[in-house]
Image (cartoon, rainbow, N blue to C red; front, side, top):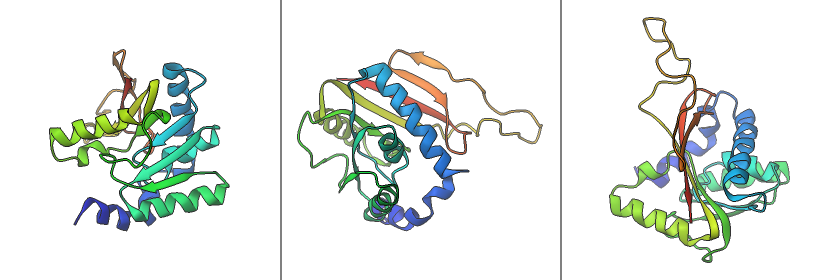
Length: 199
């Protein structure tokens, strides 16, 4: 099964990955808005969500006043994101595309966002380089890319194993100026790694 077909089939159920998807949309929107303002300033308002999915991050950013264009390889996921935006009366511009070949003009967004473990779907180092170069092509000078993914090597925060002890750290860890590890938002339990890359 292709990646596209997998996410097409998953789209109607994807919200079930979250304990409370609606609440997660709100929390992720606030977290991302704060990160964008901190790293790219209060004037950064245009975002390309290059891994739109069903709109989890895009909807949250739209609710915080950002202009968002969303793109995803999955027709089913984009259709779901469009419906979710329409219900909320949010002006989501959406495209169907692979983030290695984004059909948008160069230097047209303040920030390009890639979340929910999309990069691991790329098969080679060259694919990853191509995707990052394409994301940076879309960013205005002084903008950047925000890439976030679940650390699937960690159990959920607060998870109790057979011993009854928590299995991993409860506090976020900062590794350097360009990469922050934050408490996750999938069920408010997974550790999320966020890379902030400046153009």
